[in-house]
Image (cartoon, protein in one colour):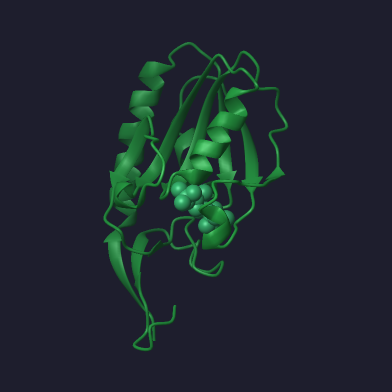
Length: 178
Ligand code: PRP
């Protein structure tokens, strides 16, 4: 049987989101922010983050294809759902649950920069720099974590566990499968 080990309890995550929101409130004071979440993993983090933001906020989402590792390493990400909002001239904050290889974020930030926002920054809850394949660094990062497979708080394994309020390390079963 696979086993879940607590990495971050709910209270720790919520406290850190309060700190991230305080920084974002300071940096964007008096400006309207277009917050774009990357589906599906970012939906819970985005929901908690935006409720702590004090400037005018507009929320939008993008969805990208989840390819296998071979295709993903090419760096090409297919956009399944584009932004509905016009990006040009706006303060855009791209919200991720986790930055791993960095390929998703690199592709999406270049794609969105081509639409000429006034500013584009990235906020991620988790960062796994050990796995990075491209040079990309989030502007706001909740936690830097080691290279474990993590689930909960929006993150899945086979579409399960996203609803857990904390973040857990998923240990595979004895046979090595997940
Ligand atoms: C995960 C995560 C990021 C991406 C990070 O998404 O939400 O979008 O992988 O990996 P990278 O830095 O190596 O590109 P996933 O494709 O698992 O889809 P999901 O968000 O729907 O779970």
